[in-house]
Image (tube, rainbow, N blue to C red; front, side):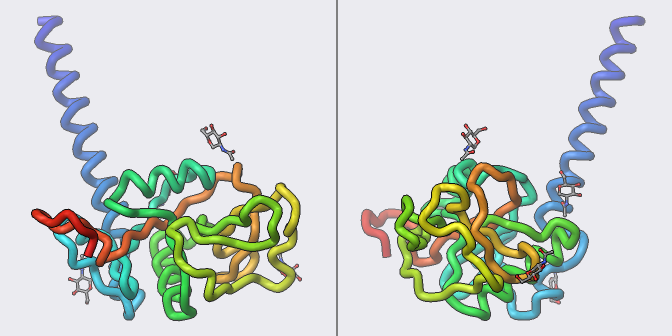
Amino acid sequence: MVKSGSIGVLLMALLFGSGDFLKMERGFVAGRTNVTEQCSMLQPCNVYGFTDWYKLGSVCVKYFNNSLNFTEAEFSCRTQAPGAHLVSVHKQKHNAELHCIVTTLNPKHPRIWLGAFELFKSGKFLWLDGSYWDYDNWNIGQPSNLYTNTEECVEMNWNETGKWNDRGCHNKENYICAFKLNGILKPGSEEME
Ligand SMILES: *[C@@H]1O[C@H](CO)[C@@H](O)[C@H](O)[C@H]1NC(C)=O
Ligand SMILES: *[C@@H]1O[C@H](CO)[C@@H](O)[C@H](O)[C@H]1NC(C)=O
Ligand SMILES: *[C@@H]1O[C@H](CO)[C@@H](O)[C@H](O)[C@H]1NC(C)=O
Ligand SMILES: *[C@@H]1O[C@H](CO)[C@@H](O)[C@H](O)[C@H]1NC(C)=O
């Protein structure tokens, strides 16, 4: 009797646990609000297995409500999809869409890591995905710690929504990952197309 009782408890714990997990996953993926509705310019990513990501120009992106330091966040992105990195931003429209995703899914904690960092103490920023530094959206007075090794990583939504700030890489923030649509290795192909 004791034995079957504890199995019952175990079963209930398992069922309850998995139910909770599923609910969390669904809430996490779809959000309590429909992001494609809120952020009218967004479409779901049309890649098999990644339809819970969003299409942003030539990349697919996904928000992770998972507070990590910059390094951990980048390594996390690399495990999420082939060729994925922390997101890079190249135009105002995409900056606005990223901002919309974050404020729709997590309005109270909108700060996120972007995939940019100052290379050593050069005063120059690079994107982790190797793309050109051809756009920025710094807040007034930012970046404030060039040529030092105190604030070498880049976040969005500090002080003013959508604006960027340089911040110490050890800080933990949520983040957005991105992978290039044409960077996916096609089955049977040995080349990246
Ligand atoms: C979100 O809204 C869009 C546009 O109205 C709709 O096509 C889509 O099915 C909705 N998705 C969910 C998960 O409700
Ligand atoms: C994000 O995570 C925090 C802390 O784990 C939690 O309180 C919050 O509800 C989560 N938000 C969303 C949108 O999942
Ligand atoms: C935001 O930035 C402006 C301009 O630098 C500054 O005046 C203001 O105090 C900042 N606000 C916060 C909350 O840091
Ligand atoms: C990021 O977190 C990892 C794991 O906790 C830690 O080993 C690493 O030193 C941290 N990196 C920074 C820059 O703080």
